[in-house]
Image (cartoon, rainbow, N blue to C red; front, side, top):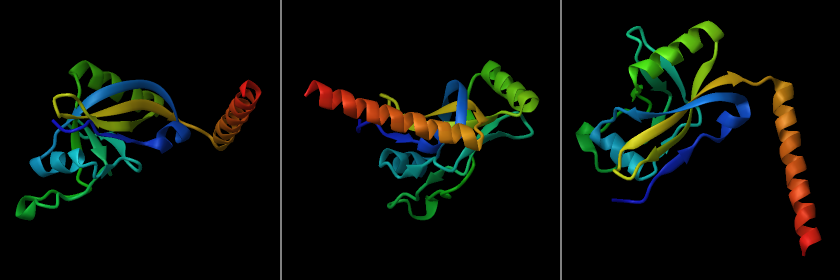
Length: 153
């Protein structure tokens, strides 16, 4: 089997406060999984949403067309169904409806069997001042690490 793929959504941790995480399977066609195994996917602008049948879908996930796909190639921005336990789906639906939270994908990876999985998180949007505070904390941590490194040398 090929090396494991790990595609991250770096904006998710900056834009949202993550409350609870889940690992979900994805329903994919043959050309989609081949493109993902080549690393030709992006989840930076994507989000998750329930349909009227209480099924969870990832929206706006970019999976580039497979180069050798031909006629049977997939659509790059199609909605893709996520696979979770019924109990987890009910809990997520309840939180989204009652609390106004959102579900964001964190990273797309392939497991040791070669199956594509998506880590998703129940998240609450950050305000602008929270984002500024995150940037300030990150800068302070960098400066502190730099000082520690120069002190140890």
